[in-house]
Image 1 (cartoon, rainbow, N blue to C red):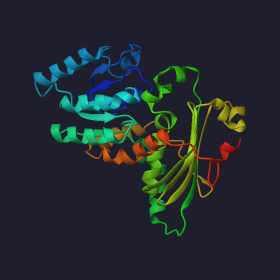
Image 2: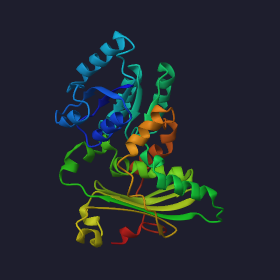
Image 3: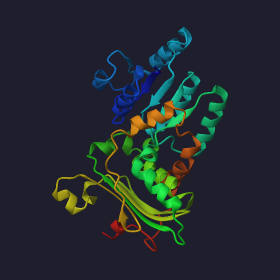
Image 4: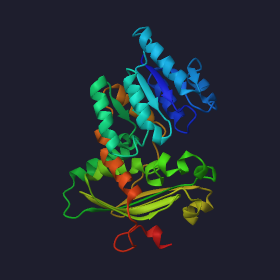
Amino acid sequence: MKKFALMGAAGYIAPRHMKAIKDTGNDLVAALDINDSVGIIDSHFPNAEFFTEYERFDRHIDKLRRANHSKQVDYISICSPNYLHDSHMRFALRSGADAICEKPLVLNPWNIDGLIDIEKDTGHKVNTILQLRVHPAIIALRDKVLAQKKDTKHEVDLTYITSRGHWYLQSWKGDLKKSGGIATNIGVHFFDMLHFIFGDLQNNIVHLSTDTKAAGYLEYENARVRWFLSVDYNDVPEKQKEIGQRTFRSITVDGEEIEFSGGFTDLHTRSYEEILAGRGFGLEENRTAITTVANIRNAVIAPLTGDYHPFLKK
């Protein structure tokens, strides 16, 4: 049984990590969050120590490390706001633990280089949650693409609308310097998926970038991709609104819809199983997606000519 600590216990994604730790037969011994709305811990690990101050959490983890090997934390799971991931991974490695970090790994690709150096210094490893890489439907699509002999590139449309209330822009997620913006916060795992399936990125054009939505064109070795991301309910198609849906997710490849809406609930547990078996995704696997979203964040907006997402015609 491995011992885990968790940073960012009050966040939206933390319960999936708690469930994954429990499902894989391990123990959460300590958790940190500046907010104390963490009653969810009782459903999984009621005996876990909890801290609202980083300094006291740091001291506790260090005390466990110094006590003896039977108490030392083996993994620190990081579910904190995006801009803190880099610092918290460094803390994990220097505390003698491996890190398991939520997406996005970091906000800028050069942060990856510093983490590689700390891995070498400490002998510990950063693992990341690239959950779509372990989704059966995505693996099947990648295998199909790799097996095909095609003279032209696949034509792909990616549309992801996940409505958020007024709170969103008032939270850290609405702060570009803290979240990295829409493409980073809600899109990075899709961009990693596209790289995973279609190969190296060759071109990156941005047609729209606001606080609530972004769109552009990406070209990979084996695909031309028009993408649109939004947290604005007004972008949800009328058909979905009529049946009470506030989200819309669609990926088409050469006009064919790729169905992967099922199977999401267990992807974190599957990711943890791979990490514990020594097959986790590390720092370099993240570089293309992180470079993609960093370039989107800093891009000059291109005019609507050539290939652009059909939602931009509205």
